[in-house]
Structure formats: structure tokens, C-alpha cells
Length: 386
Image (tube, rainbow, N blue to C red; front, side, top):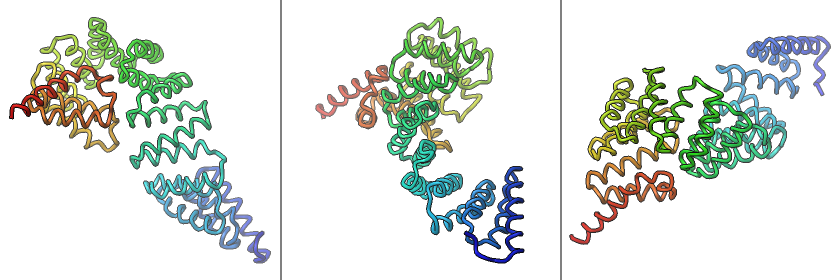
């Protein structure tokens, strides 16, 4: 396997191999990579040393680009699925996502070993590139290859949710919840059931989530929202107020209390809570959404429009891509505000754009449908009169 380079050169190479192994076990990957370089000085065709050196370089963030180059060189001479996979992981960490996608595809083409993990990483890259439909396909592949992995089902549910495919998202989140009943999986499942107006099921799941995470503000806030959706306002207000008292600086809890008060008909108190949330976090999107929803209940179109437009600005300022539900809430709220302002043609256009993107909008949010129907009716009459 090795080129004949002389007795002493072979001894030096074997010595540096042992040194590299020691540094690797100690997780001193930069030193291990340097030791493998010395091996390659004597044995330049040693593919194993090339592979290990490239892998070690990937473990050192500052030297990750070197590792990628080493894998590229190795792949040119000896392509393998594992080499493509590790190089793809390095490219992904360096945010070279388009290159990473190609490398993950090559890894899958050459080798099926560990395919579920490859599909997950490939899907993560596609998600970060906003290629959600392709990401969903890859998460689905991963979930079917490893059906006992809760993370795979959770990721698939999130991809379906981002695509607005809530009915498909629900069983994925349910599976993740049953495989790993923790706070995040419970909240994801509850949010999806809430979107689908399956509130009785949502209550059962959120109570189970609270039982597992009794002190979780996030779970208790969801419970208050679900009970409010079931018109059980006294219970919802008791939980929302207790949560705010326990965590008075938590903006999310104040927003939930504002929404529950609004649904219960106490608009003056709801407005006060939403404004208090904004005082704590003036740029918080959830606070502007809560304020906008209160203004809609008060039939204050100007206040609602300003709040929902500020909420939308907050979404575009996020470093991470906002979830579809938040974007839809901003857009639906803005359309309702336009209707309240008698800007009916604009309102109808905004609602139509939403319905084109999400035909189930009114099934999930029936409370905004009257605004659409009013603008459709009044706007049409005005057009006829003209």
C-alpha cells in the first residue's frame, strides 16, 4: 500500500500515526491534524491518513476550510459516500449551503449507510435555503428510515407547518410527542391542533404537557389560550393572571393575558395589558400582534393596521425565518384592519392573496371571515354604484 521510502521514514510515519491517535483521543484535533500531515510527508498516498487529517481539520472551526479542501482532494482520487458526507457537514457548518446540498446528494448516491442522518442534514440545508417542499421530502425520508426517532417526525411536522399543510403536520407532531413526551414536542403538537381548531384534543395534550412540566410558562400560556378558544374564559383568565403574577416581566404571558381578556370581552383591560407588554418590549412582534387583535375587537382600524404592520416589520427583522403562522397572523390582521377602515378593495385583495396561499384560512380562523365578507359585499356595491 505504501511507497517504499526507507526504513527511517517508515518508522517516523508509524510514530506520527500513534501520536495522531493520542491527540485524537484527547480531542486535540488541530495537533492530531498536524501529526497526520507528518505521516503524509512520508506516506503521501496513504488514504487513511488523508481521511483522518481532513476529519480532524473539520473539528477545528478556524481550520474547517482546510478540512473541506482536504476532502475535495481525497474525493478526486477516491470518492466515497462517507467522505462526501463529512465534507457536506463541513460545508453546512460554513454556511456554504448550496455546495453542501450537492455533497449530501452525492453521499446518498454512493452509499446508504447512515442514510437517515444524511437525509436530516440535507433537509436542514434545504430548510435554511427556504426550499421547504424539498426539505419536507427529505425529512419524510429520514422519518421513514428511522421511525423511532422523535426528532425526525418533529422536523417533518415543522416543514409541513411551514408549507401550511397543517393536517399533515398534526400526525407528525403527535408521533414525536408519543415517542418523546417533552415540553417542545407537546407545545408543537398543541400549536398545530390549535391552528386546526381541534381544541378538545389540544386541551388534553396541553394538560399532559403541563403535568410533565408543571412550572413551564410556555405550557401554561398555551393552556390559557386553548381554554379561551373553548369559551371557558374564567378558567383561562385564572391561569393567565396567575402566570403573569408568577413571571411579571415575561412579555409572552402579558400578551396571552391581553388576548384572553379580549376574547372574554374586557377590551379596556386587554388594551392595558397589550400596551404594558409593548412598554417592556417595544419591538416585540408578539406584543404588536396582541395589540392589533385587541384593536380589531374594538373596531379601531387605524390602531390595528399600525400594530399589524409593526408586527410584520418585526418578522422581517428576525435573523431566523419566522414561522408561517406568525406571517399569516400579521397578514390576516392587516386585512381585517383594512376592512375596518373601509378600504374594502385593498382588504379583499389582501384576503384573496392569503386564501390563494392558504385555502383553509377561514376554517382555521373563522373570526376574520366576517371582515372579508363585509369588504367583498360593500366593495362590490361601491364598484357597481360607480
